Image 1 (cartoon, rainbow, N blue to C red):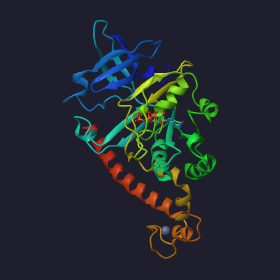
Image 2: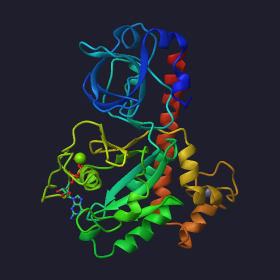
Image 3: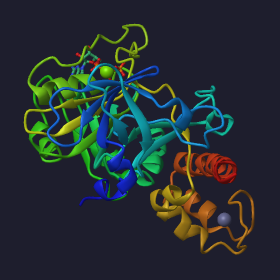
Length: 338
Ligand SMILES: Nc1nc2c(ncn2[C@@H]2O[C@H](COP(=O)(O)OP(=O)(O)OP(=O)(O)O)[C@@H](O)[C@H]2O)c(=O)[nH]1
Ligand SMILES: [Mg+2]
Ligand SMILES: [Zn+2]
């Protein structure tokens, strides 16, 4: 029995529950694919008594979640329970997203993926600071991050940008690809193996859906031109869903995120900024804030050019955000136990 099968209890089996993968979500309607030999997804809703009101806290399912559900041959099937996840990409959202007060700030972008593509385009909006933020989140996700830089055909110095990104990616593979001229697609395909689940994340208009269409060899997702005026996407993909490729790999397409609010335990910061933390270990004061303290090894590295000031500023910002979100997470866990 695999990780998920062993989570289904005897009682649940007797009640006729089976395992399904959440294939797509449209508001409160779900599409579920049978975990075994699924061909067509079926429509489902949440079991009210298990998810709403005083039923005890259960987080709503995300795309990719494995759920225990009862298949209704005559109508909508019913989701009883979300199984423990293998991986999850979590972000902090500005607005409220659910009925649960302690669920308001936390949003699950995707679950149970093996690999997560962190995508950015190589044209104007290329930004290593933004990628650092995705990397922190991805390193804590439980999946394997791969940085995918799109639209290589529009960029005269893609190799240089790859090098620049590799510096902040610290060991995470960085690929430059183009859906237009095929650059890098062979290497990218090595991550898209049968049975694997790959989540695709990044801002609107960078070519997430286009990449999935290219891998699928046909137009399975709608795509659209970015605005001429500011190079931004138009939020063409509006909900999260899985697309199964011919080889059996599953791609989770997601709508572009305007901002990736950090939801972090701090662990991802440690792995993403080892360079700075190593320097910090050499500061004279153990509580050094790396500002104007005497004997600060971090500031010394900035002065000699060994550490870029932008990277230090990005680190400080993410560290502050991680502290705030860790406090939120502690509160969430506490409320959940009640
Ligand atoms: N030149 C070039 N254009 C690309 C490439 N990939 C995508 N595009 C174009 O970029 C635009 C946006 O692509 P989409 O795939 O819709 O972007 P998305 O990331 O799915 O955007 P959202 O669904 O809004 O999050 C389209 O006009 C694509 O044709 C590429 O490799 N090269
Ligand atoms: Mg899209
Ligand atoms: Zn210091």
